[in-house]
Length: 92
Image 1 (cartoon, rainbow, N blue to C red):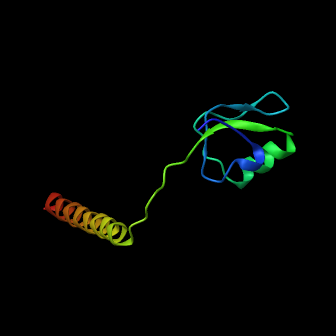
Image 2 (image 1 turned 180 degrees about the vertical axis):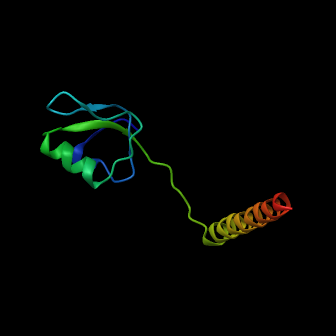
């Protein structure tokens, strides 16, 4: 994409430019994903528009997420068992 007026910028779009706040600090860097807070700051600073691109759509897969959590939990349990066995062996 390219330059859009502030009213055209949607949540989830990506800034292709950085912004400096009125007090001179870098506020939002290039690559920042636009959220409501960023839009409100830009409105407050009276920014007319920005160079943006479409955000990447992210799919959330509950089944994959649950498997990841399960694998992680099993890994923690296995690690605790190994540590306990090692501790008991060292006590001998």
